Amino acid sequence: MKKIDGVIFDMDGLLFDTELIYYESTQKIADAMNFPYDKELYLQFLGVSDEEVQENYHRIFQDFGKERVEEFIQRSYEDTYQVFESGKVPLKEGVLELLDYLDELEIPRIVASSNVRPAIELLLDGAGIKERFSGIVSSEDVTRAKPDPEIFKKALTVLGTNAADTLIFEDSFHGVTAADAAGIPVIMVPDLLAPSDEIKEKTLEIFESLKQVPTYLQK
Image (cartoon, rainbow, N blue to C red):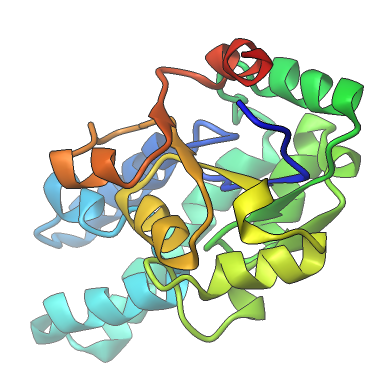
């Protein structure tokens, strides 16, 4: 592996084991409000912005009325944030080891997530790793969500590195597609969905966890 000048991390499903939390909170509220919701529907929107998810929920559940869909969305987020604030969101395997390795090499890194900045900061602070990143690019910083490459192009600007000398870590199809469109090498660590053949072709490597990455980078 050649020397890299900067690293970009996705957050949900990559740094934190949050995707299942989002799903369980949304499913609980959907069941309480009698919305026809299931995990298959949730997985359709992995890696996209909150705004896009909300737009799709309004489209899919339009027969329930705008106010009721808004209530569904709000209650789902409130339930999720209660879990976040409890400090019970675990880091994914290998996160700390990889951050330690990047520290040794003095490689700067930032978070580029489709989530909103308050949620990103809440999770990073809660895990005590916020200061280990030199910046954050959130959904509020871009006009187009993944799979559009805008967020990663913005992240490159923040890092001050060239695309070819930067490395992205992603877990979602949308994230890998965005990285590929931005011309930035990407390593995928799948979370809830196994990669398709099309997605595999867009990745540098695919690993079961971030714990495998330091050994790979040493080669």
